[in-house]
Length: 206
Image (cartoon, rainbow, N blue to C red; front, side, top):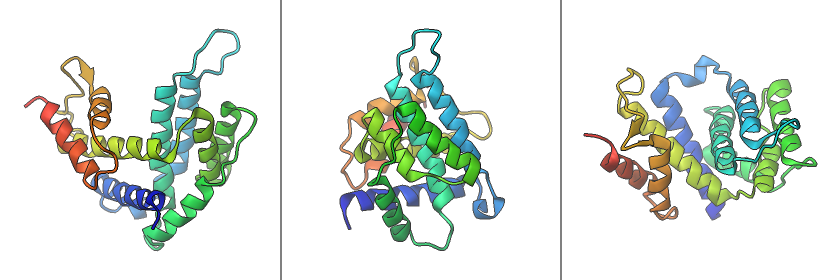
């Protein structure tokens, strides 16, 4: 199995685990993942900048974070409880390796959003086009995905549902702590996700 295929399998497994933690019967709930995708696309466009009547500079870091969020929803749309993670990963890999790009990032993002609205699907080829146009590769996606997924687990374990979770500590939001933790680690490490969790645990107020 190629390194990229392995990363996709890991992300699929992590997504199913996260969805199950939030709702044990998530398969039968019919959550509208496609809607989450197009709403995130709209939010991302604000970070990228689209208003011709004022000066705007793309916030690339934030755009990448939003793309990572979209991938969470895209994976959730693809997992069906029947197809193996290996098969799903192979399908995704072939689509990600054939990026669809419009004239610019904004238009490619609209292709991604249009598929979500019209077909209720995750257009992985358009997603790959967005990645390419923002200068993001599969390693960036993996690093961002595993980090955010682990943070979501950390939040759930530390009172996110009952409102007792502390989102800002030592003057930084948890997302900022996450970035620092991830940067300090080797993404190729077999226990990367576990190490991210431990790094957050060490920083979190006791």
